[in-house]
Amino acid sequence: MKQNVVKQKSFEFAIRIVKLYQFLKENKQEYILSKQLLRSGTSVGAMVREAEHSESKADLVHKLSIGQKEINESIYWLELLYATEYLTIDQFESMNKDATEILKLLTSILKSSKSNPKNQ
Image 1 (cartoon, rainbow, N blue to C red):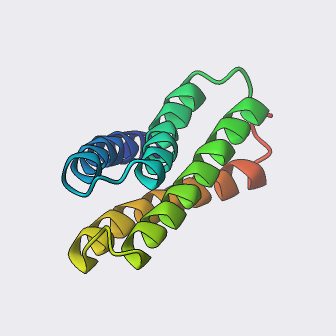
Image 2 (image 1 turned 30 degrees about the horizontal axis):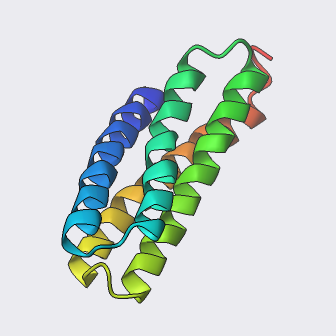
């Protein structure tokens, strides 16, 4: 069930990231930081999707770990965009809240997967 939640939330986050990227490009004329955010923010959901069909528990953990790193990187880019005044406080807080929630979900799934020796 948690993987379905993280799948849904990471997909919705990717949609928001694409829209934010379009906004930053068109309205703020920002191309470099937003491109980094686009890459990391959309790859989270891709890693979650890959994990759905993992070949082993180790493969599942590996793919979700990459997703965890990507969402953490996305949080960095969001913080940087806010600190450099490309994002308003409202934009930042909304996106950061979603990213932090995904990070917590992935962390919980990974802890559970690593501590449960079943299906290794």
